[in-house]
Image (cartoon, rainbow, N blue to C red):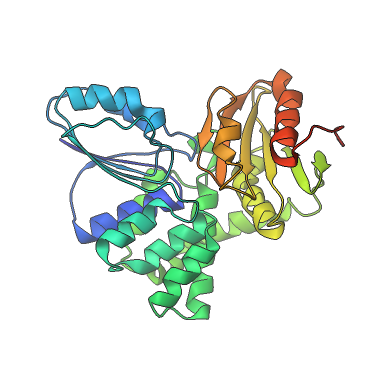
Length: 325
């Protein structure tokens, strides 16, 4: 039996779309909201499984991966998140690059020699890798107007993945993938009704971010606090990526209040080569990601002050007094 196991964000869905455009197959899809990354745990035990895994951390899934490999699974894995725990096993084919300017769809694009390049451009924009996306577009002869359309599509696909549960999203990632996969070209999707629906939701939620002030700020680095509301859960990634793009020399964290009062953290590092966002987030239970962008899936409410102090020390060099709203 075959499974496609994929992150539900722009990068994961585009990577799968590119691979299935090249090699069509009827397989069971396992996906979810952006932070639902322990997806291998959903694979039922069975001998001889054939698994394609895209855009989720191997380290987060290493125990389930070992179980599946021991049961005889064949696993093909493309990813750019942490893979320090990758085993040496004949059943595992790992394509990994943790460089801060690489996403999973870029890895697929490399393998395909640019065959479905516009979708890799969409994914790179969605993963907040605008320089990478523009370089791919230029090498493929994509003009500025089309590039802007691909950028907007990437941002909107990524936006749709953010939520505490799929009930927060405009469309479940599995259904979104099916709609995308019916469109060989990004323009085919952009001209459809579903895109118009997602764009309207994106525009409405982003309007609520206007005028939002930082909860804490020092040396240009900042922490923003969002309420426990559905629009905030959907727009939290947009805010983190906008802050990273608008203040390239500063690091930021977006703290989203969960329904239960705890927090979800998104961090963007301005110096990923020397100050990895993942290294900071791994100091907290459930934390991880990649060098430029990482997060903590659940931070207890009582630990927010400690997180901000660690964020300050890590990115500013010396702890200081909080400037809290």
